[in-house]
Image (tube, rainbow, N blue to C red; front, side, top):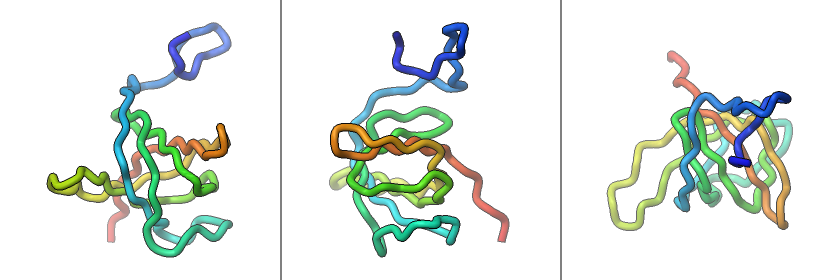
Amino acid sequence: MNGGRLSPEGEERRKHPRHPCNLHTRARQIGNGSPQELPEGYFKLTAINISEGGILLEGEVDIPEGAKLEIEFELGGLAELSPHKVEAVRVVQKAGKFQIGVKFIEEEAA
């Protein structure tokens, strides 16, 4: 099995291939769409795979589905990448940590 989401017929359902990674990020909640209190300010998450459409993040914070976050990649001395806005679409607890599947979202017009 390739680790992706499969249809009942066994076909890959993802639009974009996932690429394994191990990137440290910092995230913060944006907007007020979350029914649950998240830590104030930034909290740490690790990107464990990435695609054109989203990222699988892992951390100790339980992010509710539907929560909108702003994430920044920490590149250790290199220029930080600009923040990306994402929305949590899937959250599972695994081995004492939370895995959060997020999709990239467009910036809303001001």
